[in-house]
Length: 230
Ligand SMILES: CC(C)(COP(=O)(O)OP(=O)(O)OC[C@H]1O[C@@H](n2cnc3c(N)ncnc32)[C@H](O)[C@@H]1OP(=O)(O)O)[C@@H](O)C(=O)NCCC(=O)NCCS
Image 1 (cartoon, rainbow, N blue to C red):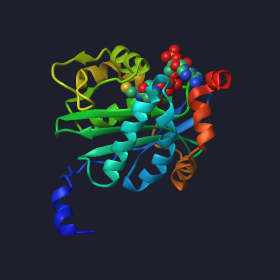
Image 2 (cartoon, helix red, strand yellow; image 1 turned 30 degrees about the horizontal axis):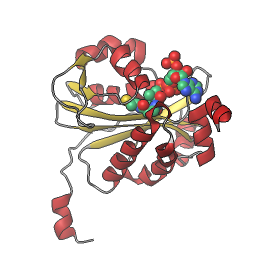
Image 3 (cartoon, rainbow, N blue to C red; image 1 turned 30 degrees about the vertical axis):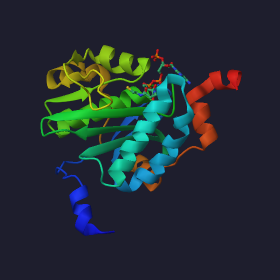
């Protein structure tokens, strides 16, 4: 690699404290470990995102394509100040969220992708990335948009987000803000999980990020509808 030019291409990075992992007990009683991953995990995560590119249902295709580009951009040092949290059940990857810091006071929420459906895994992971931005990175607010009706219900309506002027980084869509005050007003209701994660659960999560097969991912996301229509 020609590092002489590469140093001009790489955006600068802020120093950030880590996100402390937590465990959330899902409605099934299963524990989901939520933890931060670094760049090294990206190639594995991309394997899980790839099958979503063909799923029109619930806008998985556009969200998947954008997540793919954002993660690859981070991996290849072409996105500034991105972080990524994942959810794992018994090591299996069930969801991905990412955010980009715009400044020391404002974060821009990028995406939430749930691979396992019907358990509010996406909602829990979204809450976790808001927790990181507000409580650990100390941001004043997070700018959010939605690409799907489920996303709009989960974020804008469940949190009562504040509509803002201007354009969100994601295609210029209308930005909505989760302020510190709004976050703490919603925290007891929407931000779940316990710390520390028991060592045996953490060991399983860190040992391997298991990605379901492409067929299993399609089945998990499309559920019964796929069996009827395909
Ligand atoms: C938005 C998203 C993250 C929410 O994840 P979530 O909180 O885990 O919620 P789910 O997607 O599992 O479920 C949403 C609703 O659809 C229902 N649902 C849809 N497909 C389902 C399936 N295959 N199996 C079970 N339930 C399903 C759920 O019962 C749920 O109903 P509820 O709102 O009454 O609880 C997730 O739907 C997703 O990844 N969507 C595609 C990408 C996207 O839109 N991301 C957000 C961009 S703003």
